Amino acid sequence: MEQLLIMEKVTYQGLNFVPFIKNDAIQAEVKRVAAEITRDFSEEPPLFLCVLTGAFVFAADLFRNIPFNSEITFIRFKSYEGMKSTGQVKEVIGLHEDISGRSIVIIEDIVDTGTTAAQLIDTLKAKGAKDVRLATLLYKPDSMKTNATPDYVCFNIPSKFILGYGLDIDGLARNLPDIYILEEDAK
Image (cartoon, rainbow, N blue to C red):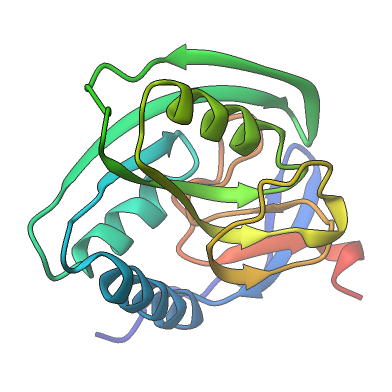
């Protein structure tokens, strides 16, 4: 189906954003990552763990591309306010499933400093997870401050603020089908 509305520029909180990654490229990478996960886990399906709120769009598309029966659950952490990380990770909704002896694939929207991912991986291992892997839509390798390197990555991106396709600015712009970058950062 052809996209009827193509936005070239959007404005949120007085800031202009331009397209950075179009949805067709996103969907191609989601399918590639789903194929990698399928290759690695077809014998023993993992529990998918979506980190809310930003990863819900990516998680839905990724999960629909997994060809075997599997489960998905959700947790929520908060570390951003506006365009910056607070440096503190706060658990808002926790994990309620028994994960002892299970393989887990964490689904993240973006791995920036890696602080949230590292904390989550350590927590899951402490709760008895057999294997913990990290899948992310976006990865900022230049911003990493931990050893929580993702196992599955759709896109490596520069350390710039982006939004759309689940990523927000104070709760807005999650519904954009494409990923946008600040106009001045696109030059």
